[in-house]
Length: 414
View 1: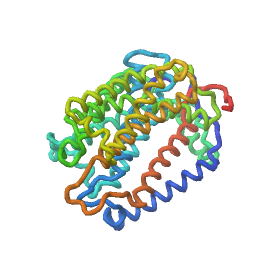
View 2 (view 1 turned 30 degrees about the horizontal axis):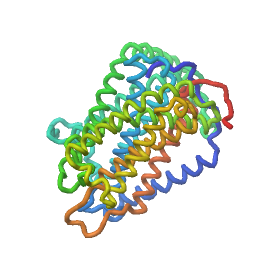
View 3 (view 1 turned 135 degrees about the vertical axis):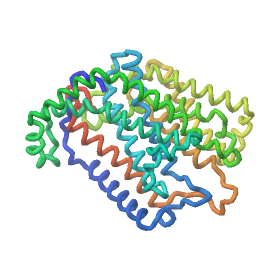
View 4 (view 1 turned 180 degrees about the horizontal axis):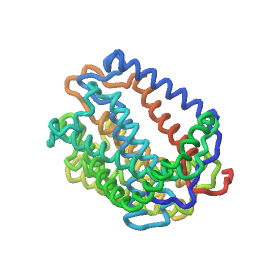
């Protein structure tokens, strides 16, 4: 992660009603997770042999990975294509991606029946090169390590500066500051800073390559079930569509994160960056829309679009409000540079991609031996909401401690 102009921690209280609500959601999620580990998946979920994948895969994993695409998209834009104007949004995007992938890994610990064997892909003797799941696992693990390395400069700058902990953590302020002032800690920080400035380009390129690999590989997971997945979504190019949709949602997710942070922290929206950034979204979203339409026509799957079934209705909701409408909105210069419409268009794209993952893994999937449809249990929903709340809380704490967001006057948003 390269230098962010005048980045500094955000000085805002952590004692807010929103934080308390999220803490309660995290507590509820932990409670149901404990129940799941004690009594097993069968007792805690509505998963079965007929429906082995539920919302933990569709939302927590595949949607979470797609929404973390802003990390590699902004890194590529700022550092590979040298668009220095966008460097200020790289840090929060990479932090969001790192947290997103971390919670994806935690979700897998909950979802896997034999979660204690999750380390097996790291052992070469157990590798299976013909498995799409193996490729996804290896890329996610490697990319998560790369993301952590890209976030090292944040920690280094926090060590070199005055790490001011927020009030709930103020009791640790003295011991932490005493540790940071030790000579060996400062020497380590200085050495790390010099080293990472020389080799960071390697991690940036590796992050882009790895992310593209596993974004596409996630689409390959459903290719083994050609007769169980509805024709509106089953296609040999599902891997390409997953990659294109992830690239299309990268910048909208960065915009939502930036504008939400501006609202929460009482900062001025960074429209001088987000407006120009939005110009790239129609290119990626249009490419996805064109590829999706061409695939439907080539396979004659467009005949299923207006059948009036649950699948066709969900497909239309995914494509029209989630792709076509924001694509047309963002073609307008005026709408791209209006905060409210830019946020709305970005939100529609994010929801459209999330719905796409839900459709592919849940709505489109039909088990030939199922005796009842899959409906997520309360525990599944609680754990998912707890994961999301935990991610937001971690982001909230880290931007209060480390120099993530660019410095600006604390302008209250009307």
